[in-house]
Image (tube, rainbow, N blue to C red):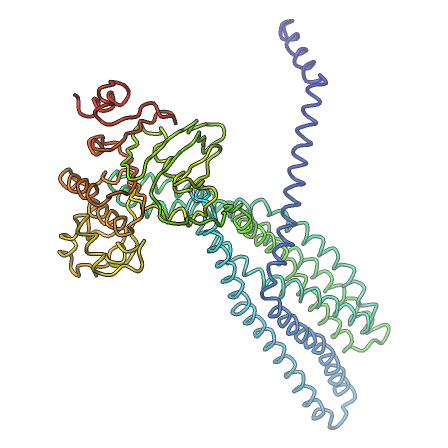
Length: 621
């Protein structure tokens, strides 16, 4: 090694041994330990909360526990009766006692009845848990999630894929419902059965009970230890399941686009890759959970063999009745069954806790703080933004010191490049998002003092992305006006220039359509949403690229209809096509979250500023 290399190695070694390096290393280890400790705490809290969530079905669970106790009673009585039957048979074979065979019939019949009752109770309890308790719990949890969705801010839904939410509501809740069976049938009944049988073992013969009871703690320790190994794999498995559902939902929703760009193979590769990860995580998790039961069976088999060998010796050397040995062997077998079930249950609990954690995370998501203020008196339609700041990400400011003063009845156009904050202004007006600072005032009333529902009643909206639900044309148009008459619906459609094509549909206004319907074109769908907004007859109207899917001729007709029907209503128009807003009362030019120019179309062109450049780029003036 050269002297230069030695110097480098010495420098590296010295660097590694510096106090700063040692301190950082210890800090990293401590942080990892804290993360593991915090994760374990959250996981344990999830288990406790899962038990608390069973409150609505507690009486059904208590009934199930009662059935389990009766079933355990049969399980304890059967070996005793079998032992007595074996002793009588042995007596009959060895002593040839006359008439003894007939005396065995009532005991055999009683034993048959006990086993029949045991089976009936077992299957009856399984039916109760699976078809009554699980259904009530599952339905109640899904109702809670549905109600929670109504109270969540729009920002949450913007960040959460629809498929992930569906997966939590369907798959994860089903796993939670299945946990009731595991808690009652496997854990509660299992431990009760073990306790009762342990007592009966010592009562029957303490010498034969010792090997069974000594080996059982080993089984429990193995169960608890090995069950926790699959925890991280179950977490990953459920997270990947949500991503997989989201990808599938995205693929079916955008099916025409996928076909148009020949992306089927690429999408299939993405799905296969994600599915493979999901499969591998499931395999690891199931393997670690499933390996517990064979290990426990092995330990139980050792105990079973020990009892058989020791019992044989006691029969030959100590004169213990053979029926007693048979009874203990049957008890030992019954003692091992709940151990195996508990081993499976402990592994399944990790599975259920991972699913529950995702559901509880959703239930614990902070909700919107909504005041109960209302709008009093008629709304004139004045809107003021006073020094408003807003950003979706605190690290990336978007709207900064925005000041807008809109008079009642004005038609206000908002233009600017993509990402300038045009649609964000609409989100703030509708209170889909709350501002960071400043205030928004409608008719002198701060909107933060008004409930969101009351605030949104002031606005009718037409968005760039049309949305139609599965229903008739009339039902879709009347979506925001449930009390509208057929005459009102037809009048609004006529004003929106869609009455003529509606009447050409197979059932006219009663034709069933949906978002994916091919009965109407994209432009016609946009016209229907415009008719919906007109029918709502709100004092303020928001048009976010409302004419983007409409041909030029229809666009002109709609502009005329809007001018005629708006009257003294305030209108906000967001547009990229500047020809649609040339007659606006005022145009606000937004750039990087700030208003850089304000004026009419003519005055802005005369200024030859940013608006002029935008207009020139579109129409080459």
